[in-house]
Image 1 (cartoon, rainbow, N blue to C red):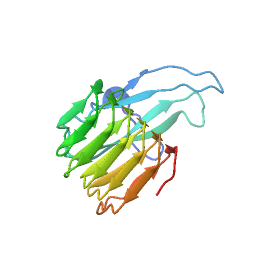
Image 2 (cartoon, one colour):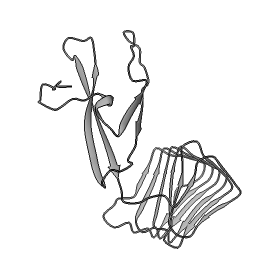
Image 3 (cartoon, rainbow, N blue to C red):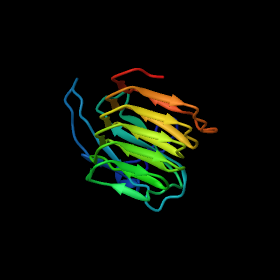
Image 4 (tube, rainbow, N blue to C red):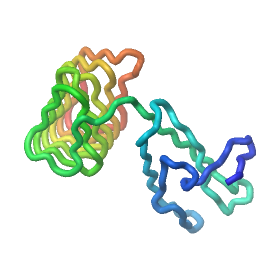
Length: 193
């Protein structure tokens, strides 16, 4: 505690941020090598909005003894009405509320979202197509999707980022207001229309 960057930015350790933890919490890397650290963020009990901290990674380089790492957690007012944490046998249909596919979860079939419902999936596996028609929001990141993805008339948010898609991706007539549609770093086994 009490470390400040030269530009007077506060610099914290993971132990000082109640909504963040790191694995491993500390370690060493030899010169020229890298080491991976996983950050876990927990929004439980937090107010909606952006929560930003700057973590510091210490270094033995005298010119940069601390390397700042900005971390932002965006908390929405949405909560999961249905959560798949392990394996869901068969297709998944979401016709209202928000369905969340937790990291490591698997749906053994297609996922269909309609009627203003929403889908959030991070590091999940879907064994078929993902289809959203008149959905509220669809946010799928770092996931394996076994079929095509179709999003038509999504109204509140549309994010497809870092996925492997086993088919084409079709985006049509989506109007997400001020929130930009994000389509980035996906591997698509088909065409994008």
